[in-house]
Image (cartoon, rainbow, N blue to C red; front, side):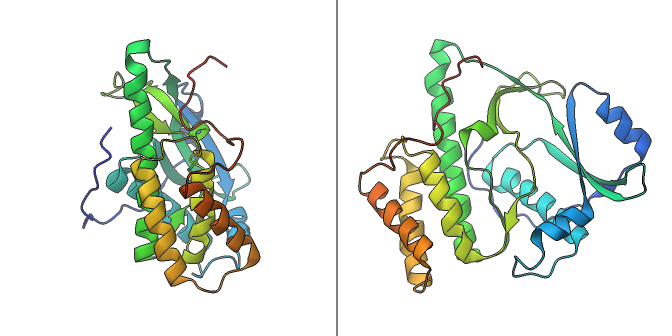
Length: 254
């Protein structure tokens, strides 16, 4: 997995393609994929009045796709999802997400340290993603921070299906475009991974984020003040308490 920072791409991000009911049925019947659907009017209702931008439902869907593409191309986070527009049997416009099924693999003892380092690299990449969004502005994905949203394993299909990687398999579109809201997602990134090595690059990136955030936003509400207080305690060596999620999976069978 390559977590090196990529140069900004100049290529135009392709738009979401339309897909027919026959093709969707084929994908639904294919054991190698998971197909989810959401009505466009539900997407619009979810974000109505909550964002800085005034987006139509199709624009929100396109934006979600672009953000997952960006996460993979610029930050090396594997998100094996494709999006399509189509219609259900009632003629309503639907956004379909088609996600590669990933076979979960428990690494052998000799591999566990290497896999743990890959998770550390993942969290470094996510913390850099949010730091970049604070600096540059623009929309960002919000619900990608917990280890249970990722699977270490291999795809069931494709020419590289023997490669073992960490995959983001929770690919529902949750996004925001308000820079002030970045504190909440960074807080949960730290809290979910509160057992991580304090010398990790994720910690350094969060320290930089907090420093720049406090300079940028001097007027915040009480809830954000409390989050900042807890983050600063965490960065000084204290813990949040019980971890919400394990930073590094135990790889035990469920």
